[in-house]
Length: 484
Image 1: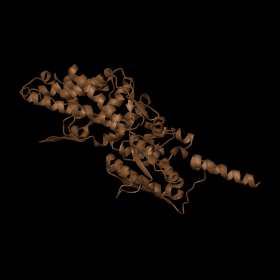
Image 2 (image 1 turned 30 degrees about the vertical axis):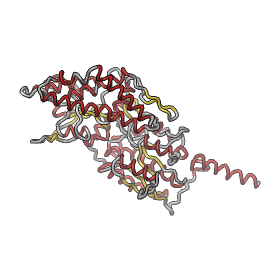
Image 3 (image 1 turned 90 degrees about the vertical axis):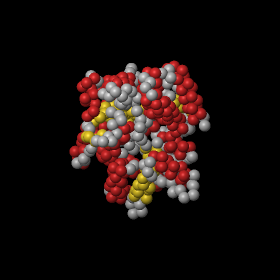
Image 4 (image 1 turned 180 degrees about the horizontal axis):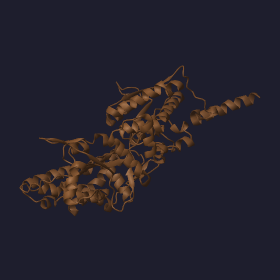
């Protein structure tokens, strides 16, 4: 009998160690009379931070109080500021704050922290049935540990949309026959942008070469990663944390021709910090950006000598002609610091509460982020939550979410797996071609001011030799970043 009494507790202990509190009767390690305090670092600001803080307060006063959990959220500023704060905490730099219990993290940063052994294994606290409630690709993105266990809890995601200045689009379309259907493909966007450049140039016949850019895009790294997926190529092939670079010249050239070339010719543009800024200044008519950027689409165009109200159009992001229906999956999740079972359990309980359909959609209605549970990704659920909660949702955010919900069944959301030096490789995709295009466009603009035709001014930059030179340098930069 003594032996039997010893064996049963041992089995329970083994189950708790292996599965957290999911073993031996699901007994919580929490005590409502002695609540666990959790700190959360995030990068939300403005209305997003207000929405997050409101949900945290509701949790603390309700579910958290009952369970014995108290959450405090702290914005670290930008994503970059947050990443720096986390690295400083891990390295225990002088003046650095203690590691938080939970923090927002993109996969590349989370991978670095996981390699340092600082993340909790969330698979210990989430059963198979619980995980199956979340969008499959969101869970897979979080399996960054070497053994495939979960380290990133999906909390809010986004993809890309196209937003258009409807007010200025309509007279252009009426005079030229341009159609919104043309904007469903990247090639169609390029052709439309050329027509727009020539149309605006013709309005000042005494000043040749002063046509305006039609389109721009945020996050050029997404253009590379998703564009290549649409063309049937996975640019970063990752297996067990090891990456193989896949940059076939034919497909890369197609990306070059449909971004760099129209940038150099002035059909596309990038001027402010974000393309929504460029719409506001009247420098662009349309852009591709994150669903979470919808709230920043301007209500008016502000020129030097006048301003006027504008309306908007929301569309799904354009894709390559004949390509597969891939769309980017992005947005930071939350990770839990490796501490003790009580704090880790409490952190997961909070995140589970935050991602309940009603709570997650309330946050999404303000932030433009997509909910992470399968049941929440529908117009029916969105409208239900808005009605039941009496939410006031900005029309742009609502239209953005509804556009995605109506198309999401036909999309394959994709994000590359994490690997060592992944952040550095992504920076090459983000800046290499963009910087080259910006510099070369300046040279072309200078030539245009001297009376040179657009064709003559751009010829040295759009030739076969120019592509070959850039392609070689681009591949070298990617290889250097990966093998750093």
